[in-house]
Length: 333
Ligand code: NDP
Image (cartoon, rainbow, N blue to C red; front, side):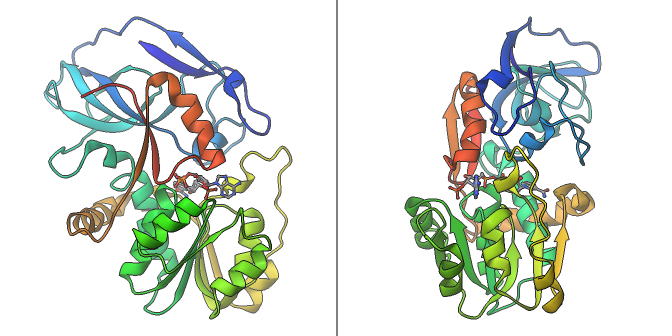
C-alpha cells in the first residue's frame, strides 16, 4: 500500500522535496469497516493552504502525515452492510492505494449517472463551488457581464457555463490560447482574455468588458483581480472563491487595494467556502446532474496516469497544466 506524506512545510512554491512516498501492508479490516481501493485521486489548489502551519477552515496537514483529499474508489472488501464489494464510493481519504473506512465515512457513487470521476469534479466539490458561489452570491441576471478568473479550471469552466445558462455575457480569464479557444468554441464563453499574453491586463479587461462588470467570480486574486475590480459596476457582486495567484507567495499580500472601488460602487464582495452550503448540496447536485444530462453543461478532466505522478499533478495546478479538473488515475476499476 503506497502512500504520500508531507515531510516538510513548503516555503513559497512547493516541490518534490516536501513529500515522501512510503509503503505499508494493506490493512486488515474489522467488523463495521470496509477496504477502499483508490481509483482516482483529486489534486486541488486548496491543499496548498493546508501545507502551511496556519489556522483555516480545514486544519493544516501534520508533518509526517499522509496527505488527504478527495478520492473515488471501489470497495475491495466489506464487513459492513452499508457497502458491497465492487461499490464505487467518494470521500475524503488519504493519498494512498488502499484506505480503511467505516460506515458513513464515504458516499456511494452511481456509475450509471455519469463517469465516476465526475464525483470529484463537475458533480462534486468543484461543481458545487461554482453553483453556489455564482448563484447564491453572484446572482447573475440576463444581459449582465459576468467575469470569471481561473476560467479554464474545474470551478471556472462550470461558473462560465452556468452564467451562460442564466443569460449573462461571460468573459473568462485564462492562461493560454488553447484554453481560450476551448472556452469560446466548446463552452460558449463570449470573450476570453489570455492574461499571460495580454500585456496590459487592465487595458485588455477594459476592452473585453465595454459595459463594465456586474459579477466577478474570483478564483485567483492578485493583479488580475485588481484589473477586474477597477471595472465593477454599481451594485456588482463578487463571490470570492480562491486566490491561487497568492498561495505560493513567500510574503503575504493582503493589500486593501480594492476597498475604495467596493465602497463607491455599493458592491458586495463575499467570501465563501463550499461547505457553507452543505445543507443545500442535494439541490445543487440535482441541477448540475440535469444540466449535464441535457448536454447544457460540459466538463473536461485532465487525468494523469499513475500514483507516482500525484505530486507532479498537484504542482501542475500552479503552472496551469490542467484544463478542467485535474485528477490522478491510480488503478483500473
Ligand atoms: P483549477 O482547476 O482552476 O486549477 C488551477 C488553475 O489556476 C491552473 O490551471 C491555472 O490556469 C490557474 N492558475 C495557477 N496559478 C495562477 C496564477 N498565479 N495566476 C492566475 N491563474 C493561475 O482549480 P480549481 O478549479 O479546483 O480551483 C479554482 C480556485 O477556486 C482556486 O483558487 C481554489 O483554491 C478555489 N476553490 C475554492 C473553494 C471554496 O470553497 N471557496 C472550493 C474549490 C476551489 P491558467 O492557465 O489559467 O493560469
